[in-house]
Structures are given as C-alpha cells and as structure tokens.
Image: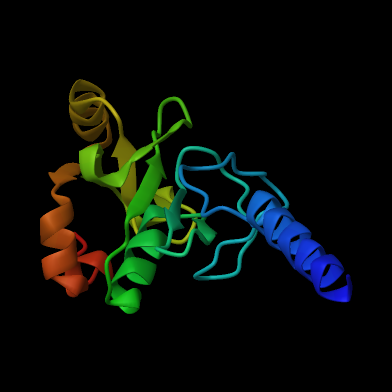
Length: 155
C-alpha cells in the first residue's frame, strides 16, 4: 500500500512539473520606457524608436536602449542569437533585425551615440537618410567591421 501511495505521489509530482514547467519563451516583449534598463550600458530605456531586444537560446530576453548597444552585445556573445529585434524608428514597433533597414546618422542622434537607426520600410529608411544627410548601412558591414559599429569612421 505504501508503494502504491508513493508511486501515486511521484506520478502527481511528475504531472504537475510537466504542466507548470516554464516553457522557453519566444518573440519580443514591449519595452517599458523609464523602467527597463539596457543590458549593455545599464541606462534606462527612455526614448522610443532607438532600442531593441535579443532572446537567447534559453529564452532569456535582454533589452537595449540603442541599436549600437544591441549589436555590440551580439558581437560579445559570439554564439548564435536565435531572435533579435530593433525598434522601427517611425512606429516604435519591434521588427526582426535581419529584415530591418539601417541608417547611420550623427552620433548625437541616438541614446548612446551609435548613430544607428532602424526602419521596417526601405523607403522610410531612404527618406530619413536623405533628410538627415545620413547613410544607409548594411548589418553585415557593421558586424564584419566592429570599428564602424564603434563609429570610429564618423564623418
């Protein structure tokens, strides 16, 4: 009888563990401006349209106040980043980094001075670049040449 009760207890524990085990999360989460902090520079995220998020393989989400902080964090991790998003500068919505159109503008235009602004729409990125006297830049170039990310080639 004790064995049967023990097995029933273990079975119930197993079922509860499976049902309530935290699942690996995916996708972006809304940024809480003024309370969320950048995982790279530790500054509070206060300006919509400049930040981003990374979700690691284990489901851990980190938030960034500047696209440059996000990219530097990615380079420092040196492993696959399954999910990453940047804020569309126009709408503030998070869009996948790999489909975003990036513009390099003046350093002072972004929270941490990277000068990198993201757009969901290519035409919006081009229009912003024209009006700001800025340049379109490819993600591949920023990742291949970290000096460009650090803005050492600033005009």
